[in-house]
Image (tube, rainbow, N blue to C red):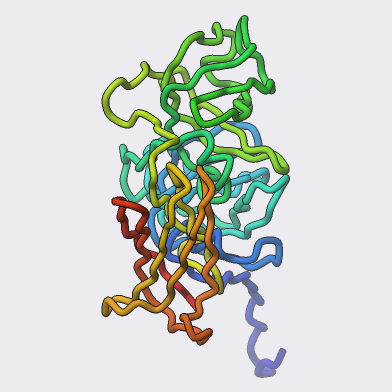
Amino acid sequence: MAKAPSLDASQITSGAYIFPVSVSNVAQLRAQTPGDGTVYQITGPVILTFKQSFRNQKYVQDNAAGVLIDDTAGVITTNYNVGDAIVGLTGTIARYNNMLQLTPVANPGPPASTGNGVFVPVVTIQQVNGNIEMYQSRLVRINNAHFVGASGAFANGTNYNLEDASGTIVFRSTFYDVDYIGTDIPTGNFSLVSIVNQFNQTPQLTARNLADWGAVDNDDYVANPNQTELLGNYPNPFNPKTTIEFNAAKSEPAQITIYNLKGQAVKHFTIDSPAKGINKVTWDGKNDNGIDVASGTYLFRLRSGSYSSTKKMIMMK
């Protein structure tokens, strides 16, 4: 430090600055490498779907993906409510028992808006079990489900077998201070909105409150595991590869074609005998000639029998 002989020394100050890597949404965050200490900031809004006092945990999502905020240090001091939109969520990511968690490094400040809803996809248990990464930390809705071999009242930290026509999954009473603990386990079929969790290799569903249970839907959104359907791709956005997933009602030839936004086909996949149920195809970002395609938005279409559906994905390099 240097100063003029006739002047007093200035007070020395210091500061810490964070220069996060910007990602536009939760799906792009989930496509990053966890555990390397990189600080990320989600520039788009995320919606709070559940919070609990344990470790100051919060579940947030947008319309494509979700993530669990694990805030043991209490960095986030704003008192958010379910339905609040949070902009500028900033932190590092890591996996704990295969759950992707964000550890915040700054308080995002007041909510950008309140009372927001989120898109809750109607899925089967088979779809969740077969694609846990797509649904992790998101709200999903299971129709025509029931508990198997369970009776009495819900207890804290307990696993229960939940079943629909497509398969079985663990329902775990993970959230300790919710209103259904101590109430009778429902019998018969019901619809259920729940958050998708994961413990090691085991997918789990957890309800947030009694209001997440509903009556069986007899008309709309009845789960049908025998319906051919293009489910989507994960991760999305992606780099350098992504997995396209579809459900096949029967083993008949299926074709997946990837197009650029000019409508030009860049990659073809032919599945001569898909398995009945969930099928997966991985695209490495190359065209039919083995050449890398450019970053940008692509469309992918599934055709199988009379079924045809198209969805969008984004490659980021």
